[in-house]
Image (tube, rainbow, N blue to C red; front, side, top):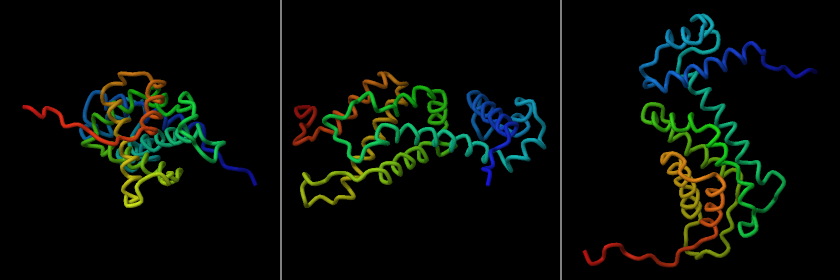
Length: 201
């Protein structure tokens, strides 16, 4: 039985709609973009649009899902042949997730800028959280047995997500290789105490 593949014309049409939507979102808020603008800019008619989508929100959802698929692929790449990751000898240059964000920096900067109207940041964080929980089992043998393991895992995952979000929001101030190295150092580091700032003020 042959495997059906998407029609190349359909793929090209959708890619054009994706490209046009992102370009329009560079100019205005997503909620202010009309389907008429999308089809006119893409060089199609409304019938072509409605052959693939019922509304513009479906188009945006598809654009985001496609990017998340790419993100998941590079997320998994470093450990696809491993059963255990030892942070002490894991090569930082194998972490290519940060390279993905650089390659698609226009998309991520744009979507985070419009996060209040597209719920992108919440979806982005949820996707990464899902990847970590589905793909990894954290080693908790050396932590305080009185610590709630689920809270500990949530703390670790959200810390990593926060690092990624801050790096993107700060417009990628350091290189992907630096971020990969720092992420491994952070994962290896434990804090036994902290100092209170401005104690004498």
